[in-house]
Structure formats: structure tokens, C-alpha cells
Length: 261
Image (cartoon, rainbow, N blue to C red; front, side, top):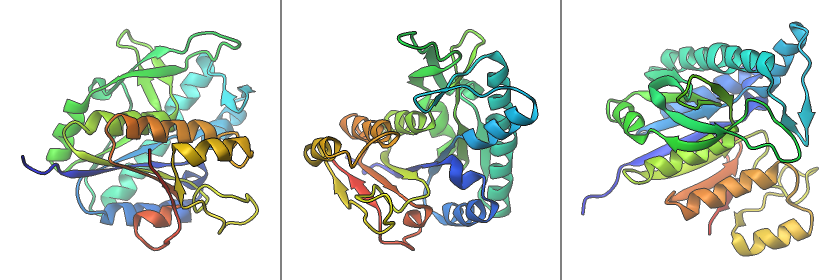
């Protein structure tokens, strides 16, 4: 049985995208990564800034954006336009041949509208299917997909979609053909025991100590859905999952959180 080719799936958080020097440093390291790779990004803060400039109110519930029709236009402009093409241009400058994609391009990511429970989040999609064949074709031809946090329903409707979930679902879809490693890069060195101490990284989280960390309130808020995506990925075929700063992909920082089942 032939060994699977390793593919790195890397999601970069919005706080890193908006800082040009940080983004440039990340792009340089990402471009140097050997082997096929996929980059996933959002751009929520930049979308909020653009919405404010256009006089469009940003509505949030429990830290999640309500995506009405006007907000969807702003998100599409920012994620699929400015952020995507800026990243692709910077990668081309590093001799990394990349293509920017939304979930509608190549029928890449199909979603369904999130069901209304306590809140109607509007045009927010929950991922149903990833086109692994199209992604594989790009990777096998040494083209790096740069995927933004927009999906579609195959009926002409775009959806705002959680970028962490898109990264997880892409890693899962590609795991049948490749050995997939998933990296969540954000502004911290990993999952922290003490939010005030940048070096208090929890080096290893599994299903057992995760429940204790939840009970102790160490893992809370936005880190809960992020870790849910991590465990979901591992259960469905992804080889390795890491959370940390952009330095972890280059090995410049030994600090990161490794997630295992």
C-alpha cells in the first residue's frame, strides 16, 4: 500500500489578516512550507469596518454575526474580494502559485441555511459537502487553494460560513486521499491556561482533559467551537491537529497546542 502524500490545511484568523506586517510574515512562512497546502481565511473585522463605512449595522448574537442580505454583500466583497486577492497576490510574490476560491467556485463547499432555533442568523450556512476531487486536482498540479469563509447551496444562494468549520471539513474531505494535518493559526501561542500569560500554553489536549478544562472554565467562549472542530476532524480521518501562532508552521516557536483523541 503506497504512502499517502501529506497535505497541510492552515486556517488563519482575522486578527492576523488585518495587520499587514503579521500577514506578510505569515505568507512568507506559508509559501516556504514543503508539499501541497491549503489556506483558509475569514476577515470578520475588516468586514465590520467596511460595513460601518457603508452605514450598515453589524448585529451580533453570542459573538456570532447575523448575516442579513446587505451584510452578505459586504462579506462577499471583503472575504471573496479584497482579502482573498490580497493573499493570493502576496503568495504569487513568494513564488507560490495560488488561486482564491469561495465555496461556490468549482462547487467547492455546499451548505444548507442554518436552522432557526433561538435566533435566525440569516444567510449563514452549515457545511454539507466539500468537493475533494476539485481540491485534489489543484493540489496535484502544484496550485495552492486559498479558500474564504463563503459557501453556497447549489441553488444560487451564497452563505457566510464559519472559517474554522470550513478548515475542518476540507481537512476531513481530503483525508481519504491524503494524510491531512490541520493548523489553526491565531494571535496566541496556543490554548492558554491563563489568558494573561502568553506562555501558559496547554501543550496537549485530548477528550479526557478537555472536559476537565471545560469544567474549570479554562476553555470557554470562542475556543469551545474551535476545539469541537478539532475533535470532529480527528474522529473523521484527519491525522494531526494543532492550535497556535503563525510561528508554529515554520518551527520558529516551539509553543503550540496539539489536539489528540
